[in-house]
Image (cartoon, rainbow, N blue to C red; front, side):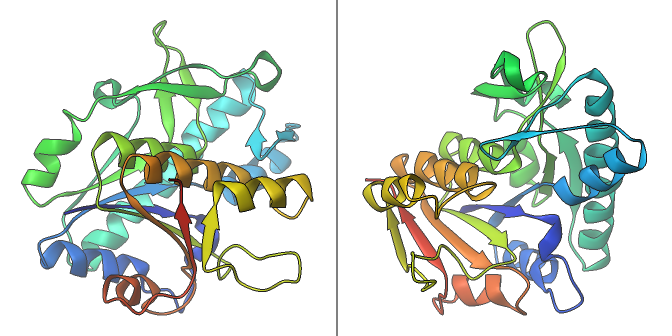
Amino acid sequence: MTIVIKIGGSTLGENDTSLQDIVHLAEAGERPIVVHGGGAMITDWLDRLDITTNFVNGLRSTNTESLEVVIAILRGIVNTALVAQLTQAGGRAVGISGVDSSLIEAEQYDPNLGLVGKITKINNDLLTPLLDHNIIPVIAPIGIESSLQPLNINADTVAGEIAASINAKSLVFLTDVDGIMDGQGSLLPMLTIKISNQLKENGILNGGMIPKVDAGFTASKAGTSVHIINGTLAYSLQNLIDGNFSGTTIKGA
């Protein structure tokens, strides 16, 4: 069964076992696909280069100058490092971006966001042969426009669209929090569209969690089981697969 795992850079710490867990899944006959972000490192490098950037509903506005940094960080540094670490853990992994073989076709999302992409099509003909040969695809969230202009795409959105397109069994968001919290700070074991809308209206669900939740609903409506868990905890991914779940399940239907 195919499992899409979205890894945020903030989850990869000294206690994290996510990459080992992913390799174990592949060894057990599962078909993991990794989608990664890199927001914190991108922000750090943009600050170093004195390039101003803004966020709108959790999405980074991107001009030509900042897109060059985004591509360099996501494809050049983060993607390469993850492939190397998965290989070191005993897995077989290949790093790709949405530009490769037009995996992620996109169009510009909003003029106010600049070179930020809205996904129009996922071409799974690149992913399927890799999975069939027990190779873990590691995907950098960069899309390609019909004019061949690369576009920055939110990694959560990419994970949700890929999970829906490939009919994944599960989509797992590895974060640095325990899941979605209610207004009192208590963990919500289940998040529905109705509850999500209420949390957004009250300002409780905000920032980068919005595209994550929206992507979860996209995959859930396609029949994928969707979970948000704390990836900084040792064996959290393996525990989820084993049925020892702690986090938030997103239910879109």
